Image (cartoon, rainbow, N blue to C red; front, side, top):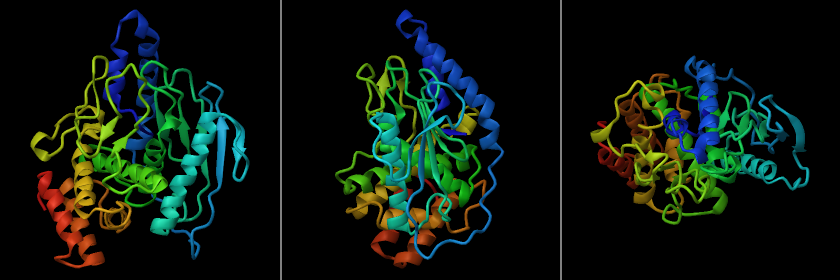
Length: 346
């Protein structure tokens, strides 16, 4: 199970003992217990998809939205199917639109037919649990909580969150990166990359216009922070009395060695995140074009081992850039500069 809110953030919330935060702390503890119980699903490394017949061109999305009714039984009751009109429930309609935006990016930009490249139906459940502070991909569908109302708002509010979680499915069906240590941080980073690309493509933003934030709009106005993570400036997304300060490093100089968070998968993802941002900023224009093509080509190349390191990933992005644009091209040079910037040796 890949969840958007990292365990270290939930632990900060769970440790709160102020009367106003007791319900929130209790909800965070329950979320942590659930993550711990389901972590084996992710750390066991989900099987990659078997070969399947892909269509000549991507087909239309097949979306189904369910409502859990504040319970934790999946999928819940059906509220909206593909092609149906909006139902007037903000979470259900945002989930539907976010699934569509994600499908559109993969189809129109990368020629990929849904998450598995074979037309996989996109299912999502909203209103999961009570005061549930998370959203996750469970290997087969998306699940969204409504937040606690004091720290987090509903998790469908951010299209980058929807794109992020569905990208875990793309990784599952391609490189199948192990969810631990540097491979796990790359797994998280790929989801952040495609999460922001979904948002940018939906809004038709250039690299300069984009916020480069993951989860912008999730926090209530009681939180001192903009988002869960910043790809442009890792470590600056929030600095709050309850949540603490964003712990992400922006280069290998401050790489975090830890056994927590599966070896720092949500923390150290800031390093490859910044590398992607540097490539996009260096090239300008739309990040889903050359930068996105290089990262997508790398993910689907078959050259990444399940236990991939930052160095191996960096070298593969360079090889992909050379294959797509040529050695010494602007794109190739931008990729090399990016990894130099974050101090990853290639």
